[in-house]
Image 1 (cartoon, helix red, strand yellow):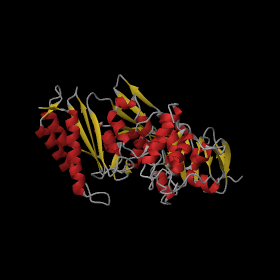
Image 2 (spheres, chains in turn purple, red):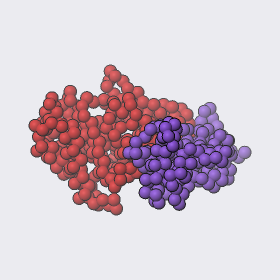
Image 3 (cartoon, chains in turn brown, blue):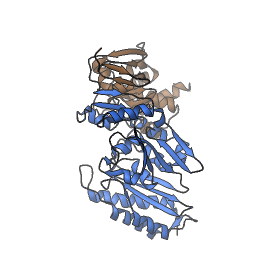
Image 4 (spheres, each protein chain N blue to C red):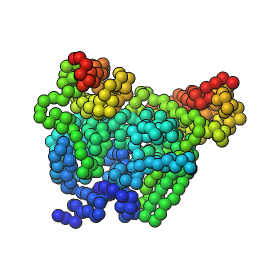
Length: 174
Length: 284
């Protein structure tokens, strides 16, 4: 270990090239990166998790949305090294067994997916929205998903998909 | 480059003392855009969003003041009870970016960036906020007016950290309005905050995105104070119109790729009049 690679004092941690992140319940070592890389870049290029998409790299499009410490954020605006020891959930962690989550299935059933690029971010945002507000109005859905840009669907079927999940989770009809 | 993730204020301040060019990283919603684009490559990054002292807010009922830690997020500012104590700040927070941005972005970061379009800043100006700065050698307090120096320029010195913002809890209407091309995910073209304190008969108005930093409008304020009726919450149509005109005249907008100066000035007049009418809903 070189003098500048890893050092720590009491509670704070000084990082350079090597660190580990808690991603989808696993501790994942990050090697050979630059310590200023965004979480999005580290997820895709260092850890091989390609579900989170990169488009704007400035928080505008929402296609890189993940949960960090339970909060929905744009992974492109998180410095990966600063997320040390915080639980991170990506789209890959939403359906770890391969079976789709209820939100993913509703997007398929409602026809809310066209090109699919924005879909992982919208799935993450929808899970966060329904966790906070289980019975959202259409206006609330529009406001809560306003950080996720879709250029194909026009959003109508996305809102339909969110409402389908809300209804099915309450057990009131299909 | 190294990244430090301190969990206490003392650790954060000693890190900043060691490197005067250190980048303070709060929510990352401004700083990471620059890092991603390769425009910033600091030797040291101090990530402050896990410093416990910066993550909480307190209300002092005796002083009628709220002290908001610099790393409190916009999402947190939108929730009761803090949203009830400083409603204009909650309204401004709701206009910031998207849920993803509000979950990360912080009030201290908004001040530290000091964009003329910073959504929280007109509220801090209208409320005459106090900015708490700390460094390894001590603390100092500045009014927000002295803190905001210019376009992305502040009075923060190397080694200093914004630790908190103190706001008075007023008694009366507070409102915030913003114009942009969408209702979400938009940099403000024009913003206005109007805050009334009925017991002291004061009306404050602050404007964003129409100057090098946030502008207060003393002419509009003194005109409103002398013409409105605080008891009946009433104002004449003429006073409401004139208030907008004075605010628009005080603005110093520029033409840029987002809007023309003429559009911004017009928008300021509309927003200021609209907010004054909400504050004094009855016709005189």
